[in-house]
Image 1 (tube, helix red, strand yellow):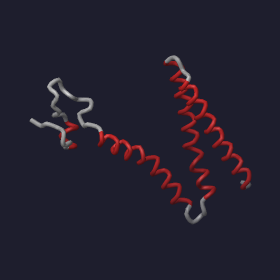
Image 2 (spheres, one colour):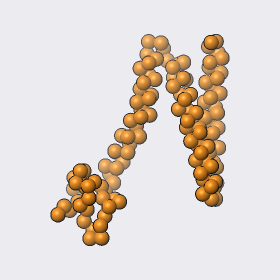
Image 3 (cartoon, helix red, strand yellow):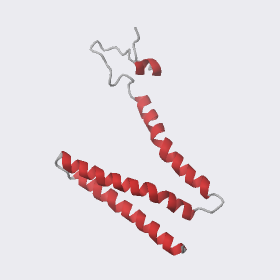
Image 4 (tube, one colour):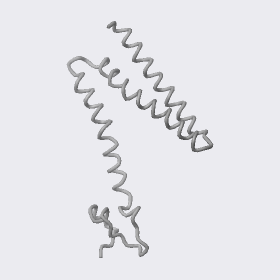
Amino acid sequence: MDYWLVCWRITWGVKVTDVLLAVGAAWQAFSNSAVAMVIGRAVVGLGVGVGRLIVPLYISELSPPSHRGRIVIINALFITFGPLIAYAWVSSYLHPCFLEKPAGGTCSGVASRLTGHPNDIHP
């Protein structure tokens, strides 16, 4: 396939992704009902899905052939493990019994026993 045709398709794919993300975000920002919020979320989800398909193609077209596979794999690993690491990092700063505090105020749930947070009082 011609190089310029591929670049044109990928460029338009990125532009469609940008428009979907912007329209969905604006829709959510100005929504005044749950239905409108769900529609905005669906539009953003469509934009994320299109972007998830287009970005590896864009990366593979721009990268040199000797590094192409590695760079695309790094992108996939960052997309896969980035949220996992972010969740673990953020949740380490939250109190482990955030959702399971009993009425007495002590935290003896499974999360606190696994994390060993210093503020926890174990019976």
